Length: 107
Length: 315
Image (cartoon, rainbow over all chains, first blue to last red; front, top):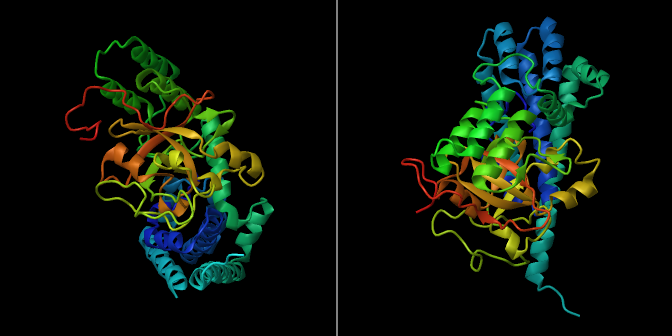
């Protein structure tokens, strides 16, 4: 399993369908999946770091590095440090990212 | 010398151009996002570089951590909520003995579901080796299929995850749903692209499975060996909610990790596991230990009594 702690917030089924429609081989599909993944997790991390106080960055990154899959641990930490609803913010941000990528593909 | 009719040539070139164009656009987008991130947070890039990790490959890193955790039994770094305690060796042995001796006298399906309830973690996710060993015994004894979580040293990133509905795969160039066998209702149609090993032979297509080979930690370093090893490898898929079981062969790679699914099943596989409306659900997937190629693909009819409310057989 390859899991990142915010995977449950991703809703990219529409994007997945579109990618399957335009790719002809599994190699092409996998390459595009990885590109999408890179965009998504950079954007996710950016959204989190934008909201997290700077003095907590290294502590958060250490936890993320040790257990990037651990939803309870990482969201637990973020909820303690960020007053806003970080899951909701992240979910909105990831929705926008999905729309952006979709528009790139459909153009 | 024969040529493609002009229309076909145009279509092929157009498809090629479309895919290249899309890939390039996404590459540019990805670079822009990475550059902007690194400019804004240079300490993050340094943090990961100091630990020998490229942030772009964080999923690979996650897969390694999960695999190591499953081996050592220290999967989670903080005790999470909602996870059952792992069964003790004694509990597992008792469970296996009960299965072996058929002490309960219950129908096989109920026995299987009871065993799954005892052994599986509460949350869908990787299991440790003791849980997998207990399930191997359970599947062999109740379902009658010799299945292993680790076969010939190979192990999937997870053996307990969500399966999603896939489309039919092309069996030959020009294969279409006009001639391809299909389900009577809610058929998923045909995937526009080919499977991970190209066109899928007719005998391998009906009962096929999809696994995330692309996220295996050693996929890139052992590509040639692993591609051959996984090609049409038989797996036992058990629906952990109703106990339905099917033997399928691996014919494609996926799904993307960001879909929240870990495996895929052909329309026939999904229909047998959960009926025509079944699009996603938790399953256990083990490799079938079948060096003599005697286990047939398709449904495993191990039970002759249906439990009310939990359909085992399709009607």
